[in-house]
Image (cartoon, rainbow, N blue to C red):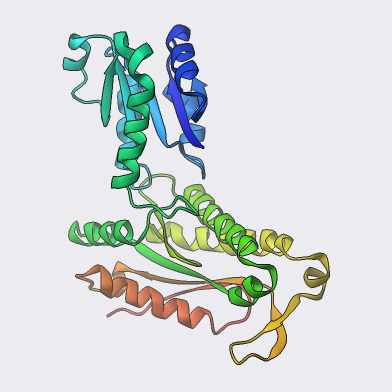
Length: 306
């Protein structure tokens, strides 16, 4: 079920919107955008924001602009509720994808909400399991930062011994671990750098995150610690206590495998120069492969200068 946040101080408006769309959506009401930020910036952001626009409220416009500048929230879809044409003329600085007149809310809100969600699903490329941006968005984010000449670090995270876990417990358990890994990465990244950071899901058990070089080591250390603390809880008690599972290797032979760990390879623009996103992702991938040579969860940073 899609999640729709409705932001308005007008209880009549919020009641009308909720009554019209609640059968097809999970509706959450807030009286201001500041109070909604916790949910908007969480690991499960809304599919749509219905925002009652007050042209005389600079706080909402500024907050929304800051959100849209963040790579993680630039694809956030906002449906603005406008009082009249004068309000529209005064909202040039407000970043919304669609609008509806207040007088049409009762009759048109359900159709407009459905259209906004459908449009965003076609335009926004996200992984359906983790709700994180996928390959196209990842490559574009890296290239845009390179083109701007920014100094940044790129990390590639990959799960170790993940196939034996899938083979023994099934894809449902594996999907749960991939989903929670995405949340752990997002939590660690946003804890150390809330603005101008980026988390993407390449696919399978591979993730990337982009941060300022001075923040990425602390985030990676936090990620390794929380991963090793939480992921063992997804194993059966017997396997967890033994510290391994019995499964079949790629040659079809049964053997013991250690519990899933996470390996992270990091590079940054100082080890370049990089002109193309492929050059930088290749270097991060090399460091990820190097990290996988070490037992357990770890991260390795390429400190070489090229």
